[in-house]
Length: 320
Image (cartoon, rainbow, N blue to C red):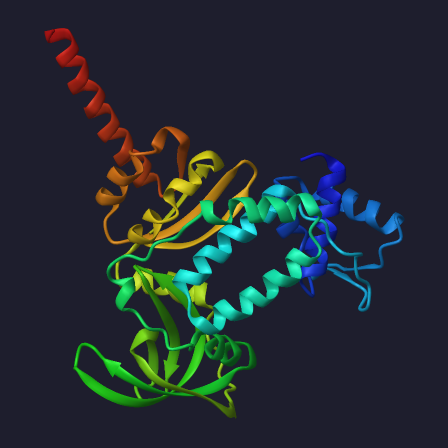
């Protein structure tokens, strides 16, 4: 990415959040903090009203907005691809909201990009697995996200699978995540006085109450990390080349996928796995175009497997 494109992208990033830390900008574009300061100064000199506070971050003066954004062909096709996933992997309410947003996005696309989306619309498809065909999220996702954002106490009727009981709960929602074909809600359960993982398709009724909870809860990411320690799960971070990333889109959920972000020409992916041995063998399928960031023990395990494969094949070659 050249400097002009990067500076423009930084401006868009600044407009996307209330406050953006310099370290976050540096990490996203894989640049130094000094380069971040120089790029921000360039924006200020161009008349962008940026407010910088030491130790907090950058923000843009309220009321300032960019003119309509022009998307690249790659960004336009990424929107279409995301739409296919949302249609199959969320609920009807979320799908309708996304469809409405897509109409607005398409409205500002150039004619060439509009034509491109129409031409390839029938060339992208997402199929549900057999387990997903039976999943019904009952249009709960949008209500859950609203409750999380506003810190509303939720009342739910929940079927507890382990006890085969239908229970009524009041919960304080923390976050939602998707894993192994199901959406999950992490929330503090007032009945159990502890944090619980609720599968959303098992929530038969959901009410967003007017009660605002005051308790301070961990973020979803912090909760998952803590749970990983308690359940003796291993946190794995790896980076894969963008050229093969699309081939992992479905497989990643079976390996404990948690989150991902772009780092230069690679996608950095975070997992929680109960078996480093199993993860190592899955990694071997595409390991020539990827790298393990952590833990070192996984990297060493993969090296042992690779060396064993090489040794056996060398022996067979010599025997021939």
